Amino acid sequence: MRFYVLTLFPDMVLDGLHTSIIGRALQAGHLSIEAVNIRDYSANKHQKVDDYPYGGGAGMLMQAQPVYDAFRSVTERIGRKPRCIYLTPQGKTFHQGMAKELALEEELIFLCGHYEGIDERVLEEIVTDYVSIGDYVLTGGELPAMVMIDAISRMVPGVLSNEASGSSESFEDCLLEYPQYSRPEEWMGKKVPEILLSGHHKNIEAWRREQSKLRTKERRPDLWEQYLREHPEL
Ligand code: 6GU
Image (cartoon, rainbow, N blue to C red; front, side, top):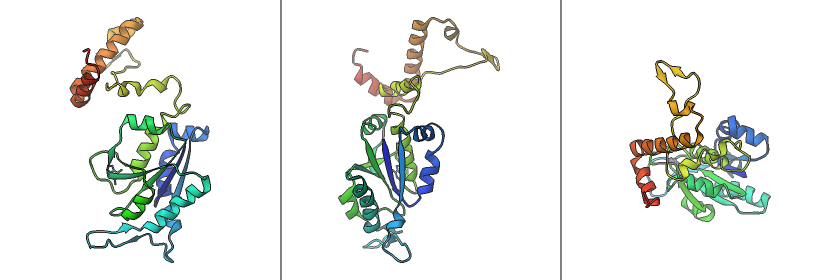
């Protein structure tokens, strides 16, 4: 998977993603991330990329031209037009299913806005998907882009170890993860549940499934309702 991020803060995106599992996957060549600095495409002698909104109102807008030229610099070089995702609170809310679907693409472009947003005309021209990461307002699209790149990357074959690669499956069928325990067997007077020491794999699996259901019912009643709708036999 090749990611291209159009941003005014390329270091923020690159620094944040060259760590831990995603950093290792980049090193191994399962992924690549290129941050394109929109400011490099300003036609202005002071490298300005923002201006006042027509009609008035608070703040500044990113202008169409530098955003468009940054986008074109990518598409002309690679000879293709990948999906272009604009990070905005006005988009569809990101979820695991979307991460799985986007992980099937060979390339993705992320467009990160700042200030009060971006001139609508360039959005109409280049954006294919409007995505939000939740109902709250952030100062820019960089953190949302990083969140999406992390979630998409872990669905790309080879990025997670085989053992870990099933760990989103529970979310996919609408249940939260079961509780887990490591050594020591007793800590602060709390014992590890007996069944986990039994070595009886069938029973352990059933116990974990039950714990997942209890936890989902209690912590995420909305997900539990969805689970019941998708498993009408229950
Ligand atoms: Cl994608 N962008 C911004 N600026 N704020 C957000 C968001 C995106 N998703 C949630 N809040």
